[in-house]
Amino acid sequence: MDGAEAAAQVPGPDDQGFPARRAPRCSGLGELDALVPRCRACPRLVAWREEVAEVKRAAFQDQEYWGRPVPGFGPADATVAVVGLAPAAHGGNRTGRMFTGDAAGDFLFAALHTVGLASQPSSVHAGDGLTLRGVRLTSPVHCAPPANKPTTAERDTCRSWLSAELDLLSPGLRAVVVLGGFGWQALLPVLAEAGWQMPRPRPVFGHGARVVLPATERRQELHLLGSYHPSQRNTFTGRLTMPMLVDVLREAAALGGLPVSPEAS
Image 1 (cartoon, rainbow, N blue to C red):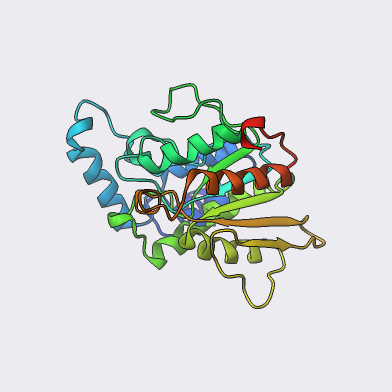
Image 2: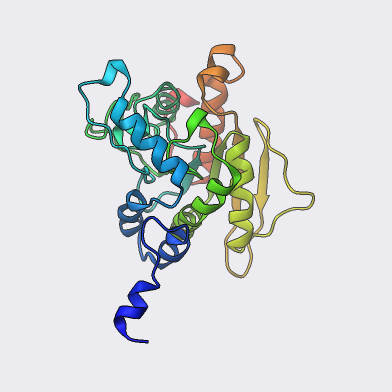
């Protein structure tokens, strides 16, 4: 096989195999974060995110939408990961940064700031100066889905990005906070495939869920912590309160060896 034939067999951004072929080859998070926005593997998600970016919400008519997959956000040496659901149509899909520009992100960053893991309590746009300390934000699906509901096929196609990201974080990763049942169900098979041993029966999601995945020959001990997603449905009804989320993040920070702000004690 000559070089041209070999190149023709490498999936392009529009091919379903693009994430599975490209993500595992990334040698660092910088390379992964640069590749994620190129992905066009899920036609329904591509059409939706680009339609939203063109039509826009009235309040953001003067802004240029990102309109592409949103990569993870946070330092490469993070010891804590926060796994959500997917970018919001007028949040991450607009700003290009995970959890930035929507109500759920406002709630999450306020909690992270209280614990001492975020430099400021709000996240408005990608150039607002916000930095994270010891924590990285990501999601099982990197494109904004219609009605905030990815299909199982879209989740599975996108899985390689999450798997590669957690693998690159794994040397220092100590705890993962999972926001919502969708993220929990998406994450468990990724961790099992990555070499962590899953308890039997498989852990059930719930706010306050705590699971310890023991160390193996390939992986060190990892703590999973469950929290309700900071969606407006949950926060407006009081199903998830700020103290509840702060408590989970504070525990994750302690497990990750990160100092906690006195305000969160």
